[in-house]
Image 1: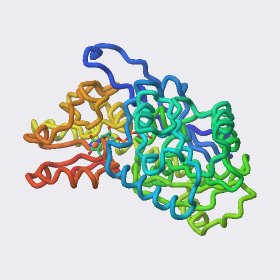
Image 2: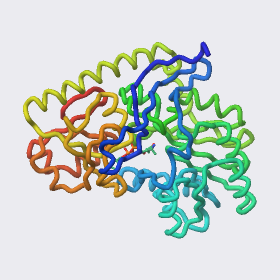
Image 3: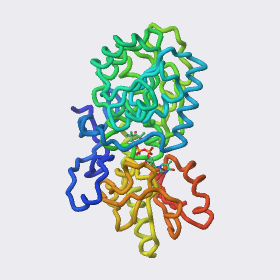
Length: 395
Ligand code: JHZ
């Protein structure tokens, strides 16, 4: 395995979305060592130790896309573009979560796949055809028998969560029409390394894709990227538009531009990852110092947005409720629970809970714009935010 280089060790970590009940404060959670790998041949960046989908994505999964206006708007914008440009007759979404994307389409022409049954139910209740199953060849065969082929498949923040990419793409080939389009969207490796957002790494993010690595994977299945869109969502994501090799769709310039940008930045060089790791270690010390300085002045800090990403930061930097009194979150299934590993209480979001607070650690830093707009009163009375990217600072 000389080609695989371990370039970053983010320490012992719990499962990122495993919120504990209040009476579990004393339990010793199972932890794993979060190490990040770079494959010199395939250029793929991945985490080392992985967990089965059944452990990570079950009927207690808390994450809901609809918790952010930014995501709702992003899905709406994409759906308008899809309807106008591609006019699909049948759409399939892999990882449809709470239906925030599908709701922009007609119920009769859309299918959702969501293995977390507690969330899948939400979309089903709205009248959509949804399946509480993991994406697989078996399921793709079953669906193509029932619906025949689909002409558009969309998947946001899901493909990178599935270890067996071979199974993912073989299943897609089984149901995607010859002239169909596959659109996938995930956090961008380029943005992650540029902005030192090491919290894009946690157990659910098995891979963080670059165009260069994804293109190589797709080529094994006769799939070709024909268009790229870079998005601000989730701290910088890339949306890849993909076609089958016999499809007549033209390859757009955006693909070449993205590749040039990645190569210019050195996404295909191990030295890039080694310097990234050095910056991450420095930023850890800087963040700890910020928290210690604030506490030494007896000021109160709370967290805003108990994200999966913040699980990585808090556990890596050993920031627990010696520093953060509580987190605020709008997600029902996270409220009145404790953050994984660091056991910080999570309270139901209410503006009032920001009164008398001096500092807010922004767990949901990826929604900074949306949150700053919402918290004008806190900001105008001098309230400060702590962020960790591109480097730890108070704003
Ligand atoms: P958010 C999850 O990651 C897990 P997380 C998953 N692995 C993934 O890839 C991404 O989503 C897509 C709250 N919030 O989106 C809601 C407020 O309280 O950054 C959420 O709990 N108030 C599938 O968890 C959290 O913050 C607000 O105003 O890192 C945001 O989580 C807003 C905007 C959000 O994803």
